[in-house]
Length: 408
Image (cartoon, rainbow, N blue to C red; front, side, top):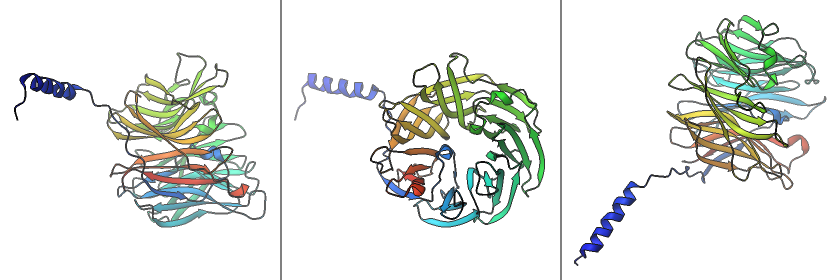
């Protein structure tokens, strides 16, 4: 069959134009649910913005959570447990780390020697809101408890976050809730306390608004960052290098709270969090993507909003590839229904795709909260959080959630 010259030219021109069209990136197919585990629960949604999971090189997933056991006293017994799952969602082991009264994990890290450290709150008695201590525990790779330590006084003490420095020691960020005073405890891998820095005299203590949201992270250049409503870079001996008491100065009504940090290959500090506009009627809240250079100069401060949702925040950030980040968090609509959020952004904070998920069965209100997240080697995504299961009794409402979407 002969093709007419004009038709041939039109066909070739159309093909050429098609090949010049820019490819529009699409989000991954997150319609396959590999596993969904309700592993214990917590009574306090304030811990939902915490990353309480870590992944191993073989794609196994380890999660720490609070398991409620009804009993005598005001709050029953709430244990800290540690659980490992394989990539298919099959439980490999589940270990109790600490029991008695009320205990909450606040942070979980995989150490350089392949073991786990858990930071949290250890109640002195059943009045945990009044009498608690900062807590740190270390386990072997199979979850066996190696040692546990408590720090501070029992006047509402809490460990907020922990990191491993380039010297191999653990830096535990703690707070006395009654005074809102932050301090760092330095602990050796064997569990020996090596030092403690009090911030009571430091000029930046009062700048850390809502100290209980603060985190600590180590940098590759042998420093640590303390961040929350402000960012502070310190040496491993506790000397202040620089402080940013406000992340943004452009809008006096905007306050940025940072909940997670990583250091990318270029050395830049990359944060996820939330941006609150106190000048708006309803305190407009958006997810925040922030990058700060090692010399303290602000590079990017990006507000991320999502159509159909009123508020958003991001609680964790994970680097998928250079200048390609995956964030987990929470969004809520005008009726205060809350959903787990997954969003992929470029190194400039430009959204590539976003997905929301609902695991609650609430009739009057959906309640889901995203915590930590990671991308596995086969391209699937795993995230941990909290959901409310409303068919349960009130003491059983809030459940720890572990979900993997994507490839089997």
